[in-house]
Image (tube, rainbow, N blue to C red; front, top):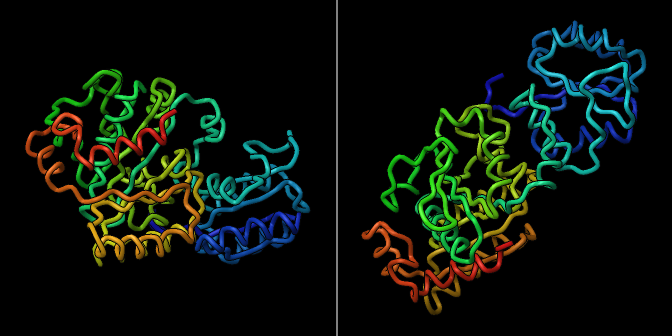
Length: 364
């Protein structure tokens, strides 16, 4: 099974209610549940008689399955791709068991983690509860939405509010944060470089992708806010189970971020791309709360029509927040030409004020 495909699943759980929860949840996410074993004999027979299907499957089991033993699990590990076990109570006869998930997002997060990194045993929920920083990931619904500009200037505004802030460029297709402000040599021994009072920048490259969890754990303990520029989030469902390095920050942000802000353009193609992303989000469970921002809204009646289409596409998802930023080509062009942030080129511009308002809303 190629790494970018959604996983196929075999369940081996006696508790009918929990098994239905697992199967139904994963099916709703678009994953294939190819066999639901009622006892160990049925499970072993299926894996023996269907070796090709079993070899590409994730086995989800519980110690309550009749006849199951640790030896059985060891033998099955040679026949299936990966194994994850759940239990309601500690069971010393089995190793590596997870507590029964109580929500859809908890279950999906654990399963995604096994698909991406089977050896990882970190508890993302514990990290979220104990860290210092508020993590805002910003993703683009389409191209040329101003995602990087908003991420950079939002980070600057948070630092102006005396909140230590890290801006992370995780746009693997087209990293641009450093270029927007003419910064070179972003990498440092600490993993980020200070570029202004209470503001630092980091860039995730292929070399750093393998240590994202450790880097983000350190960053979220050091800063008050972490703003992540993800770039395009098209094909989100596949990327959340994709083990390629280009998906590491997207999956981290969805599993462990506090807010995923989706930026959209108001034109016909921009709204079309937004609708596609919203359709994916409706079918995809993530821990991060979702918000939407319409960027470059026109003035007058045209702008009202743009906003109406934007709201029609987003409100059914019951987002954390829906925001609108007006078109301000002069301020955006000035900042681009001078390679600086909006507050530095024109602190009174409407674009700068809109982003400053968002910063005031989300600051901790």
